[in-house]
Length: 136
Image (cartoon, rainbow, N blue to C red):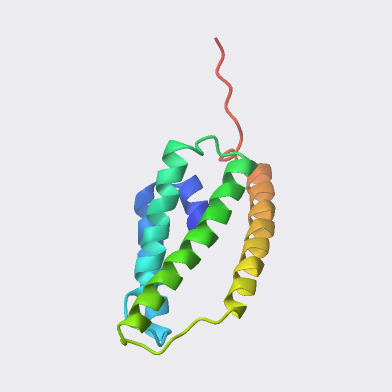
C-alpha cells in the first residue's frame, strides 16, 4: 500500500528507494533466499509506475483503487512464481498451500479499505489528489 501511495504522490526515485529498502529489510528476516522480497517489491513498483504513467494518470479514487488491487495481485503472482521456481530447483523448501488464496483475498479487501481511507484523508488535508481545472 505504501508503494501505491508513493507512486501517486512522488516520483519513481522515492518509490524505488522505498521498494528496495523494504525488500532488503524483509529479506534480512525471512527464511527465503536473499533477494526474493527485493525482487518482488521492485518489480511490483515498476509495474505500478508503468500503469500510473500510461493509463491511470488522473489521481482519482478509481485510479488509486485499481493501482492498489493490481499491486496486491502482481506482488502475490510474482511471489508465487519466484518461490515456486526456487522450490522446483530445490533451493528452498517453502511451499504455498491453498490457504494462501484466502490470504490474497484478505489482502485485497484490507488494501481497498485502507486506500479509501488514505485517499479521503489526503484529499481533505492536501491538494495532491484534487483535480485541477484549467481556465480557457
